[in-house]
Each structure stands twice: as structure tokens, then as C-alpha cells.
Image (tube, rainbow, N blue to C red):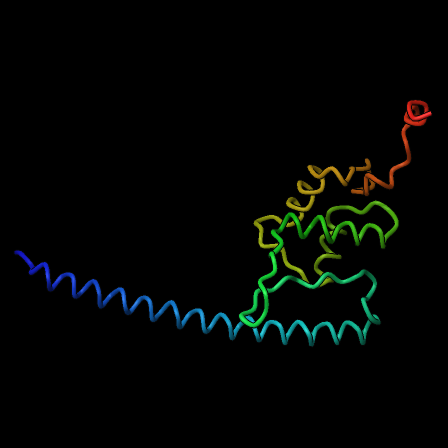
Length: 157
């Protein structure tokens, strides 16, 4: 059974045109969803401000958005988001926090980590990052806030 090559090309052109229209429709839907998300985030911030005062207990870091009406902003990946928020959360707490406590605070700020095991992800991310140290039986803390170890001052004198 043979098919006419010209007929086959026309079928492919028709299919391609249909998929290009589908892509444009999906992009339009995505822009509408982005606008709805932006409105919902603004309402959530207003409610937080009413409940906790401006900026709440921890300085809020608004999630970056990509909008068709503004310049694109680099979206933070999960690791960058954890590092940025954990620094603010720990400074506000003033003490080391467990990965579960850090994750709970991230959630209170309205963020969700799209990973299989969020507590494990938070722990591994902070463990591997130079700006954090793990304090036995206490949790994670900022490396810059750790007291100098004995002998460090002697080397700088």
C-alpha cells in the first residue's frame, strides 16, 4: 500500500499548523493563569499584612514571576529558594532550627517545594551550602554567626 508523497506532506503541514495553534492557545491560557496567580498572591499578602502586620514575622520574599507585561525575572530553583528563605528565617529565629522547623516556616511564607521529600531536600541543601552549619542536636545555623573556634583569633592576631 503506497501513499502519494504530496498528500502525505499536506497531512503533515495540516498537523503542524494544528499543533502550532494549540501551542498558541496554551500560551494564552498560561498568561491568564499567571494573571490569576498574581491576583491571588496580592490578596494573600493583604491578608498576611492584616494578620501579622507589614512583612509579617519574617521579611517576605515574593516569588519571582514571568509575566507577558513585564520583563522576565530569573525564577529561583528549589535550592536557591531554600537558601534565601532559610537565611531570613534563621536570622529572625535567632537560633538554630531543625530542617522541619525551617520547612514549616517556608510553608508559612506561602512557598511549596516541588520535590519528592521536602524535609530531606531542605537538610541536604543546607548541609551542602557554605553559608550554613549543622549544630548537633539543634539544627542548622548561619556559618557567619558561629563563634570563632579557639585558635582562629590567634591566627589573625
